[in-house]
Image (cartoon, rainbow, N blue to C red; front, side):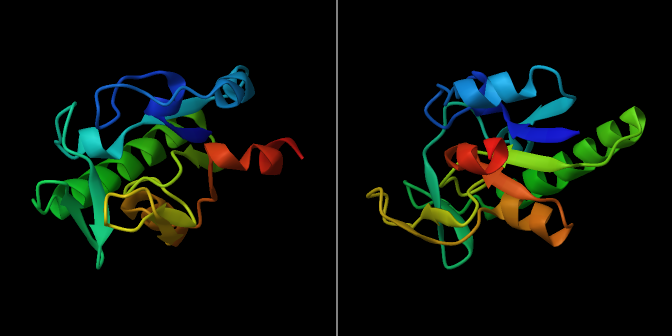
Length: 148
């Protein structure tokens, strides 16, 4: 079973209220079991919401509010939900395809905390949790990895 950021599947859960539809991800998942997820929403954050970035390991929104607990709770709830769904299907969590650069879902690169679009090496809170549980993570920017 696959996990996928719901925003990549056209769900309007992005901080701005929109989505990040990604055609190749939708096409790839057509004949597969998957669970669309949004850890930020599951952590109790509204849509729309102020954008957040990781600063010294904390999720801070653009207004300066620390929303780290929402991110952690959302990540943990999402992982629990995913494990339950995979178990019901008699499958393992094979791969997560998550939103690049996100403070929740970014894998390998995330925004640097200045809200200027600059990226640094690092993982979002949810991506890091998945990796700790040995669940492979890619982003929509890694199309070549999945198709190659």
